[in-house]
Amino acid sequence: MTTAAFLPLIRQAGASNESAKVVNISATLGSTTLVQDSRLAPNKNIVYGMSKSALMYYTKVLAGDLKKSNVIAISVCPGWVKTDLGGSKAMLTVEQSVSAIVKLIDSMSKDQSGAFLDRMGKKIAF
Image (cartoon, rainbow, N blue to C red):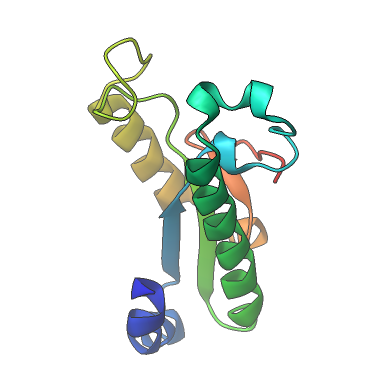
């Protein structure tokens, strides 16, 4: 994974005065708590949900591995965004989603490490 390749630099950044942050973009479709049967999976996109669930699992493991360092790792759901994947009926523009995620990154705290959050910082069940 890309994060593994950069892990020495991430740890080095965490050892400096400021914390380092790893932010993985996920989706509520990857939540095993929220999506419990195929009726709740839009277009029955099960493989997409599985990949997002695996990413959230990896984020939790990474956060655990980095617990004693000054590195914070989270998974974040950007919301339903107007992209090729989200479609034109989505509620958010890319700019709105990214702006909220940047604010979240700026305000992240160590106690959030390993969490799955929405773009506003609200915890989502994994």
